[in-house]
Amino acid sequence: MTDDAYVGKTVGQDTKATNIGEAAQIVQEEAKSVAQIMGELIADAQQLVRKEFELAKEEVKSEVSKVQQGAISLGIGIGVTAIGSMLLLIMCVHLLTDIFLLELWLSYLIVGGTLAFIGIILLLIGRSRLQSVDPAPRATISNVRKDIEWVQEQTPSSKK
Image (cartoon, rainbow, N blue to C red; front, top):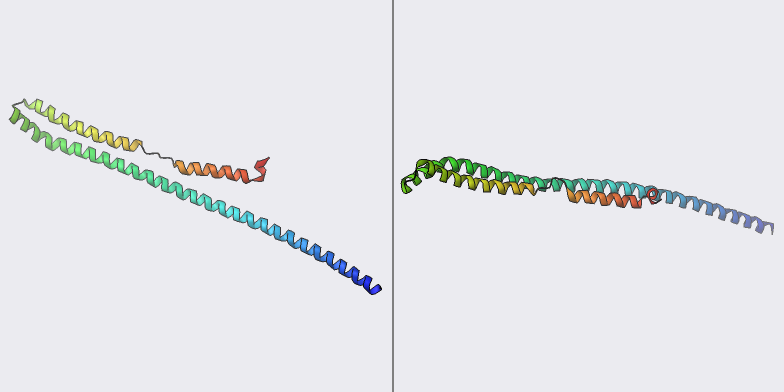
């Protein structure tokens, strides 16, 4: 009986030791899990920030493309107005003077006014294209705000 009592105590003590060891191991694994989760959360947050910057860069590229198109229209409008005004003005003025027997100054007024009108229309088209450009990356700003709100909701200190 003494042997059985001794065995029982040893088994009981070993069981306690095993339970304590398992508990310590579980706590250690949970600590690792929390550390791993925090590490993954930080990595995900870094990746999210990188993606948001990439999105902002793409939005800015899109807006720059619109600016280029507007600037090209303005440049073409100015070039057409200048070259057309110089070359056609002289030719058309003399043509009007010869065909309709108008005074030279009146022919200059008609041709110059027509070319200036065309140039103004082209300039207005270019200006309207440039006014439609939004320099701020609105979609990225909205996404970042949503991400900040989500992170604040997930943070225990902000749930007070």
